[in-house]
Amino acid sequence: MRQRQTRRATAGRNRIQWLVLAAAVAAGVAAAPAGAQDGGRLNKVIEALEGGGAAIANREWRFVDMEHSPFSGERVQRVLAEMNEERDADGRLSLTPLIRIPQDGDEDFKWAVKQVLDLGGFGIILPHVDRGEEAVRLVQAMRYPPARGSAAPEPRGERGWGPGGATRLWGLNSVEYHARADVWPLDPDGELFAVAMIESQEAVDNIQDILAAPVSAIMVVPGDMAIDLGLGPNPPDRNHPEVDAAFQTVLEACLAQDRVICGLGDGASRLQQRLDEGWRFVLPLGG
Image 1 (tube, one colour):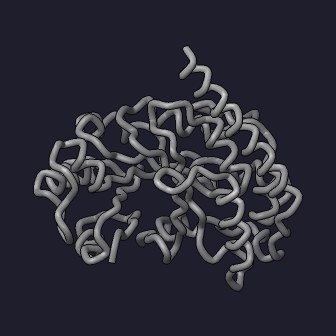
Image 2 (cartoon, helix red, strand yellow):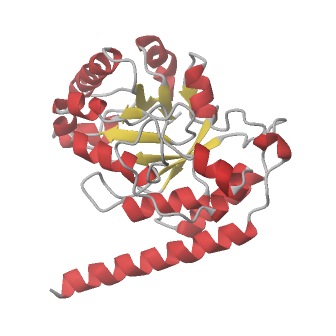
């Protein structure tokens, strides 16, 4: 009982910290240049994918990790403030921030998604998504309730309204932000990118159900996959054969459909190989 009370108290403090930080960002992040308001695509990940290319970390997007780095709203606030100072000639952020939250797919992550998006994130990477319903819950957490006449009202969004920091970082007013803060490609005009991480044999077994959910991309990664398979860490500069076999199973299922983007994290030395295989959303790992 005492442990449960302690966990509840900790969760409550985390929620309060995020609310305070969201208000601080709403008051303190400068508006983007006018070029960001011209109606063009803001999310460079989506822009690259719509153009038939790949979206690679540190080229189109920045990976902001809160799973294996300190779980700190202040860190997200600081990273986004830094990124706000680096914009391209069109007034867009030079790299699109996608944030991996620490909660797994079977945990209560809705409040954390709301806070990250209200701070200005362009996408959520959710760890350890093992079942299709967990991927659907991610989309629901990222979406607002549908506007009247919405072409894609389901799955119904559950995000609360209060995007002060996001409107400033995106360079939009509240009406414009509401129209564009939806999950792509479920909403073809949406600017939010929803990523379900595939990190276990259970997820591989359920890949068809996960791909049936309206996420933007899946992302399979070698580290947790190896641990889940009982193999221990992967050897330097290569994966266990069983891990690469799991990658292949996921890739084949992903390439058999044309809506969810195939994504992975893997060694930077294998980047071109992975692109040639058909992976289009890539986080290069290591040197």
